[in-house]
Image (cartoon, rainbow, N blue to C red; front, side, top):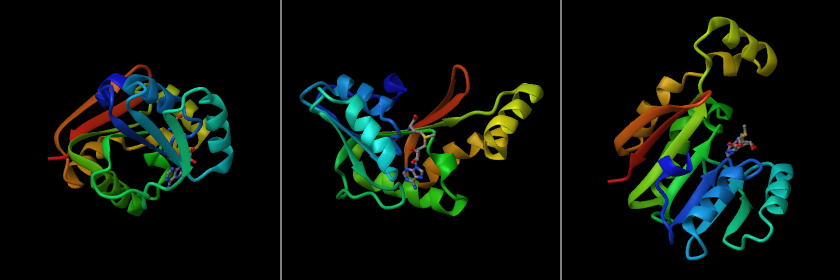
Length: 173
Ligand SMILES: C[S@@+](CC[C@H](N)C(=O)[O-])C[C@H]1O[C@@H](n2cnc3c(N)ncnc32)[C@H](O)[C@@H]1O
């Protein structure tokens, strides 16, 4: 995901729905001390954990925030990433979140949206559903690319990562 996000040293990166922040600090390492990575999440508990884990990385910070209303001016970031977050949003909030990611990126900036891809094997899929709930069993990851395109991103690419991640990248024209 870090590679597919396309961040470079010096970039400003936003991780939306960062959870415990593992992707945020990997992005912080990628952009080096001349860049920065900010993770936002509405859960104080995961933010506290993320801050502890990122101790010693001054370019990696965390803030309270929600995908549907990002607290940043237009064009602030070079790269926006979001991992395993979209399925948490009610369907009607997904377009709003994608529009916000578009807004806070600079022209030429890149987005990466990754989410859980249900296993192809029906038995494994059913097991996932039994353990995690029906959303994960049927998570419609094929709708991510149209969502990203609908927000205005171009040059989209999509792919699968082992074992169960589907991702889409796009560029803000
Ligand atoms: C499954 S976790 C994924 C965390 C992390 N991105 C990862 O890949 O491990 C989903 C996260 O999305 C956050 N979340 C839920 N609703 C959100 C919203 N409206 N805006 C931003 N984040 C949200 C949750 O608090 C949770 O930390």
